[in-house]
Amino acid sequence: MDTLVFGTDGWRDIIGDKFTFENVSRASQAYADYLRSQGAKTVVVGHDTRFNGDRFARRAAEVLAANGLKVYLSNGYIPTPALSFAVKHLEAGGGLMLTASHNPPPYHGFKLKGPYGGTATQAIYQAMSEPVPMISYEDVKPFHAKHHVVESFDIREAYYEALTKLVDVKQIEKVKGEIVHEAMGGAGTGWLSGFFSYAKLSKAIKDLHEHPDPMFYGVNPEPIHQNLKEAMDYMRDKSEGIVLATDGDADRLGAVLPGGVFFNSHQIFAVLLKVLHQKGVKGRVVKTFTVSRVVERLAAQLGYDVTETPVGFKYIVDAMLEGQVAIGGEESGGIGVAGHIPERDGMANSLLLLEAMAQSGKGMAELFSEIEAQVGWKHAYDRLDLHLSGNELKDAVLASLKNPLSHISNRQIESVERLDGIKLNLSGNAWLMFRASGTEPVLRIYCEAASKDEVNQILEGANAFVENVSLASV
Image (cartoon, rainbow, N blue to C red; front, side, top):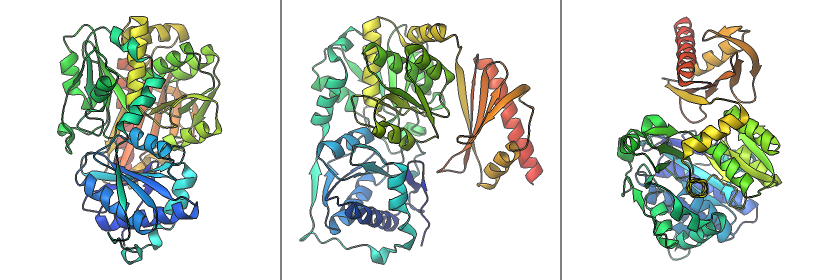
């Protein structure tokens, strides 16, 4: 039997390799066993726009139904935050989203949602996934259409209504310039324009791509600058407006500003924090280990305590479930806010950014420049994703970093943090972090410094360090 590895946010594998109907059935049986052990009677299932997403979701739903659970199956592709909202709205015991989120097109995935309507916690994943290796396909309970029912659902209107309570919708009418949504061919396709219609906004929103695409229009569906060339070209000659870019399942957010300038997740986090403060939202700020120092400095100035977690939104959810969290977010663009579900939501956050632009009469660049001046910290950031042939080099690099180092990338190492991966705090208010992906043979290298040139220089040095380790390992 294939080994199914559950990482920071579920199980992901290549379609037709390990991500098969047989293995989806095995994982679904394990999830059914877990739900029944918790006394759950209802579960919600959805899927994104990847190949065979509807068929994988139908198979999972049938396995869950065969185990005596009442199953709601989305009547089409659905954004992950809308699926999470459906779990809470329908008072289900849990949720299953068939998505590989931002991973490349060949991948599919298996994400779980808690009964509270958000990302499953580490405890849920551990309890559900531990029995998977012992479950064979023969152990999967058979589905019989005469005895088991899978009911379709449409959560769109209820979800839209919840968004109108989070955002001052009429303010959006005042946004200057064009509003564009880049769903990257993913599950957010048509959902923001659908909200504009639902809210009867006269301000138009343009879909950069109007149709879902399992190949994501030739890029990986992660809203980072490397994948948003079309959006950047579209905004190159614009003096106002914004492109809001959501990932493959629409829980993450990036943006492109006039001049074709990419606006990253750290900047979005900072602006959203200030928006919530202006709305009078109280509580802690929770950030993962890879989020900009700008966020923690701004939080301190605004009177918020800051909690730092390992990478993975499930750790932020743990904090949100404890209560008193104003905002929680991660470097990858997933951000959750108070007053909504305990889940990252690229569409809700898009609307909050539009509200900030409308109320201030300013663009994102100006709003963030004001934050930089307020906290006395210049922000430039980038990330390298080194795709490796296997996990051996990842392990070798991280092992090398455990040895005492005084310099890297021609910068003095002032301190080292090991909450998740290895973060090197460097001279000149910069930091460099190495972390292995939990779902792919990828080594991620993160860097923040005061300018783009400094970031590039430090990352070049980090890449050279990895190459030297590789040569030494041969």
